[in-house]
Image 1 (cartoon, rainbow, N blue to C red):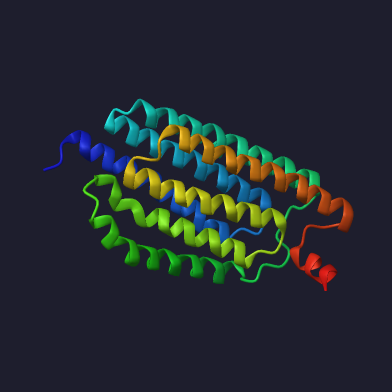
Image 2 (spheres, rainbow, N blue to C red):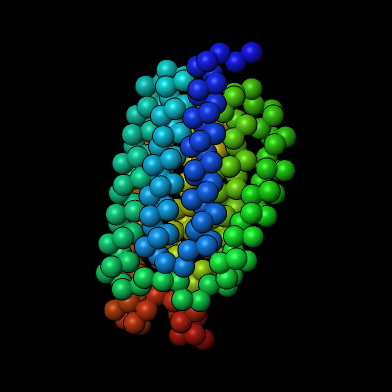
Length: 222
């Protein structure tokens, strides 16, 4: 029988992973980039809370430090940088998504179901109680790819990339208690660097071509 502490940790993990998954699914519903960035902020804070909960349950100072790092970068810095980029480029909505909001949510729901079916046997191999939530991380990876494939502006592509990276981080923390802090720091800084590069890239696209629609770049190439 689970102790009260185990039950509390399990409830906290369920709550944080549920919020992470909900924020990812809603990315397919909202066409407003401002709303999508806010969802990304919620997702980053929830991921940080998940890492901190795992760190507290395992009494790991390294995981607690990683949780604070995730909060600073994924919960605060990245959404702030994306908001500044959206304001600089003047792009406030995804104009021509390949999937309408209803179809997008249905597709995300289908991918979530697939993730749970595929990941359950893998999660069962890990004795850690947190591993039962691994399908959430897998679903995030799949939804991140869906955002990348179904949205055409550079800003939306960037949001999809961050969702995908959050999914990979979620799986890592749930299965192995995360990567060593040095490696996690390096990976996080890589994401920040990519975001900063793409921020400059989208601003240059806006100045040169008057927009950030990737289809327009394809037409220029043709």
